[in-house]
Length: 62
Image 1: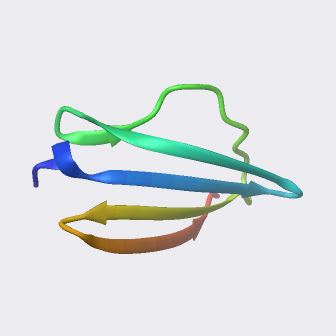
Image 2: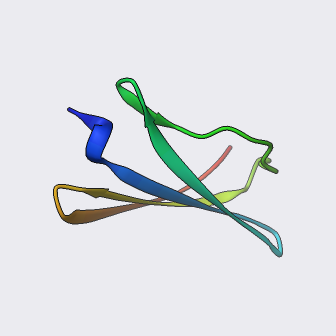
């Protein structure tokens, strides 16, 4: 899959804290750089836009 035209955003929810992270194409994958507070139990909502369609995934980090 060509990720050069894909956009994605993660929302990290940990306790009362909320962080928004934008993912950008990097070769054949999406990535971001920075420092993020993530611990076991952090809830993640991923929103990906590709070919005009949104996909959403929700998961909890262990």
